[in-house]
Image 1 (cartoon, one colour):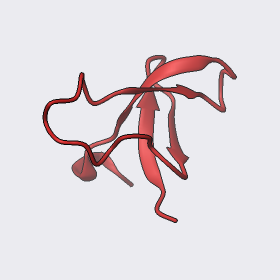
Image 2: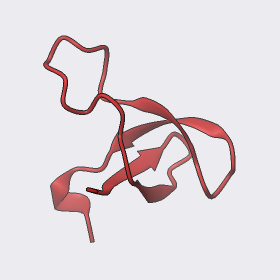
Image 3: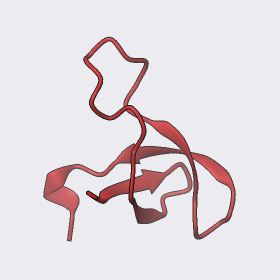
Image 4: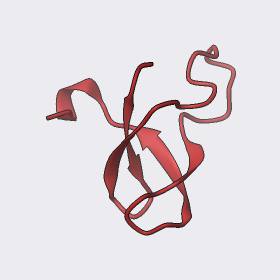
Amino acid sequence: MEHTVVRCAEGHVFSTASFPLQHLGAGRIGPGRLLRCPRCARLRHAVPVAATLKR
């Protein structure tokens, strides 16, 4: 299973085992998804971190 590194609206960076609907075409509404952030334990809007920013 592939892990995706994401950043929540609060700026926390974490990885998730699945990022729902990431393989849809350009017709989707924005790149973000609603995920539970493990740092603040709240549902937050999260977007994938660009490949150049991964450490």
